[in-house]
Every structure is written in C-alpha cells, then in structure tokens.
Length: 121
Image 1 (cartoon, rainbow, N blue to C red):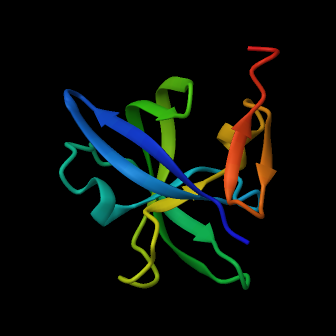
Image 2 (image 1 turned 135 degrees about the vertical axis):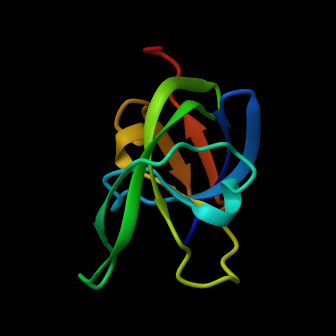
C-alpha cells in the first residue's frame, strides 16, 4: 500500500524531477541527496532526523526555489536532505505533512492514485 507521487524541485535555474513516497508519518518533505545531486543546493542547517524505528540519522534542512506537486507550486520551500537508507529504493524521498496538510487529498490505495481536492484552492 504505497503511493508514489511525481514532483519537481528547482534550485536557481536548475530543475530535478523526482518520485516521492506519500508518507503521512513524515512531518517534513524529504529528498534523497542523489536525486537532486545536479542542483546547486546551498549548505543548510545540519541536524538529525528521526526515522521509523526511532533512531536518528544525519540530515540537512535546505531551501529550494520551488517545489511542485500536482497542480500546486510552493515557492521558497524548506526540505530535508538525507542519504537514502538503500541505493535500491524506488523513490527519491518522502512527501510529508508539511505539504500534505496544506493541500487536501484523497488516496485510492487500490489503484495507488492520489486525488487532489481543488474545491478550496
């Protein structure tokens, strides 16, 4: 039961297309470093992120010029950069609640499809 969501991330004049795992348990949107390695990301605030299971891993909070998912584009967005736990993951990060709570949606888990509720936008 996973839903993968395409997204676009921009830093300065460069863009990366990524696939994110919808994760309602993630408080912030997370990008794996290799997925945006071609973007000129400035160093951000280094810290720790708590992952499933309760342990912590090194993380870095950075700002991107924009973050676009479906019909929504957010400008000057903070995201968390992490090294992926495995090189074989079929996604480039996590679409977290910082984005999801601002953009109502419904999930069809059977067909692994995300529907955006555009009535209030």
